[in-house]
View 1 (cartoon, rainbow, N blue to C red):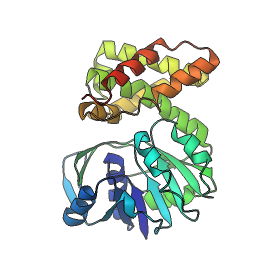
View 2 (tube, helix red, strand yellow):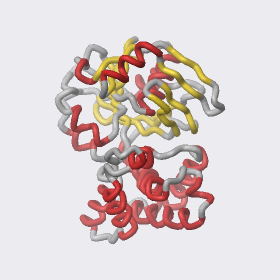
View 3 (cartoon, helix red, strand yellow):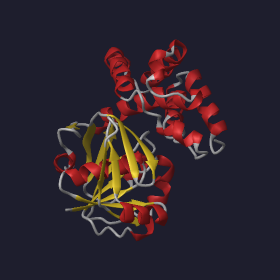
View 4 (cartoon, rainbow, N blue to C red):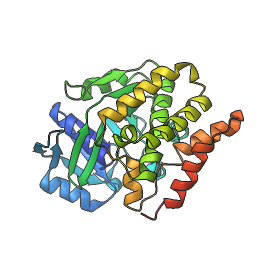
Length: 295
């Protein structure tokens, strides 16, 4: 079965590899025609957590050649690219799965006419080493929930394997907000301090700041009653992806625009609405915005 994967970044490539391993045929749609050409020519190379390499053949096309030909589509682009897709994702009969950090894309989903829309959160650590190679740095799960319709079970069947497990959640809101807590606590700090996820645990000053960002985020999301459980999950995530360099860190290093607006910006926005002070989040937001596009 041919399945569209829009996005040739780390998560797009990672998901495409495991779709291929599950007997599916991913069609990877990339921002640049050069990456699409390289993927068709050289294949997709997967490097596991131990460093072993496997290369598989895949089809790939640039964004402009997406015409909704595949009945199922995974959208695995960053929030900063979502605006480019507004006129691209207009095919009402296609079932979509969105894999984004932050929550800015939720307003986009509200306006979509499709009857089958699912949301997923990715707990894996991965990095794109070049245009055709993804390095799987930390194994986790993909949590799935239906935003509209009932396609989450089908997506689980397409993606799930022993090495790439999925977990279905009945309600999408808690799942997405828990992911926001993890992103808002980890990503800005790793980008500012230029450290891996694991170093947030070994550096006591970084750990202290992460705790403050965590506390502000659970307060504005009104999830303080789950403080202990969520804090433990955050620590486990840092350990499981200890070698991972967050997407925000990679964006800062490469001089690209970060997703700070859809992550920390949303925390600050909700804090303002509830009249909750968020000084650590505000500092992180302003500091990352100062680095946006500079490298």
